[in-house]
Length: 378
Image 1 (cartoon, one colour):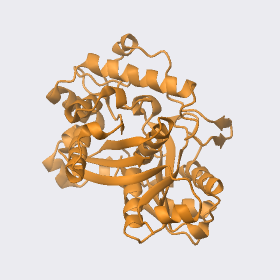
Image 2 (cartoon, helix red, strand yellow; image 1 turned 45 degrees about the horizontal axis):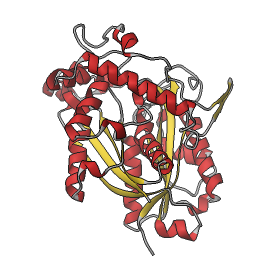
Image 3 (spheres, one colour; image 1 turned 135 degrees about the vertical axis):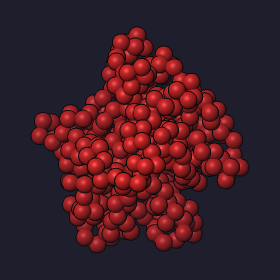
């Protein structure tokens, strides 16, 4: 029987703003509801799940101690399901999905829950900068490796104007608003209970955002720059997950197959322009598959910044009409360890709504990497 890796469940939490609705919710408590929801919806028990692969970028403080194993023990998976915490920074949860799919394809696993989480409210980004190896500071100006500065450099080197960035950011907000109001995210979101009530929508979406309003915002990384809080991704809290199984396992357990997992690729780039990472990652994937970019029906690219999103989209030749059709991280947020799986979750559900097709999920990665993976919804 077929060991082809397939996705049978794809879910995520709503995404909260920094110090927002999830400020008092630990990463484990964002993750466990997704895992328990997957088990409840599939009727599977922990005895039928081979592994938990969970991404997290800032593995310190509350997110230390092999976070994935703690999550497994707190969830309905129980102590017999092993777990590993994966770090490829912004692509941590995409790497979890890749690793799960590769393990299934190789016949080493039959069912793996893969995803990731980040609480950027409770484990702030950048606290570990003092621990960077001294020789890295000899190779690069550490200030130039800050995410915002890399976005400024992409804008400068590749000619992405402030106006173009603001127009793109406004469109992301408008698309996310429309998707939320029309219920397009309903099938993928698992509501989260907090002490203040139930959270069932992304917190960072700003209805009514216009290019004109964004043009009034000051730049924050460079005085004469073009990157602002309005055309950059939001610091966020959230989690996302998929259940990857073999095709044979899905058939044996009468599970609906949402998508077949295709090929994947990763790439390294100059860390001072880390935002271009999706370009070599995707080009390598296309070359391996013998595909053309026009064969994809939808593309989800993580909007770390408008500058790198626009450059990557245009350099790859992606039609804007199939690109981040429900908005992206500028509106929805970018919880580092969760975004890499959030992209496939949103992509698969949108392809399902459109009757199927071939989709690409890709993103840039801090310190100069890119990752890409494809999904086929029949």
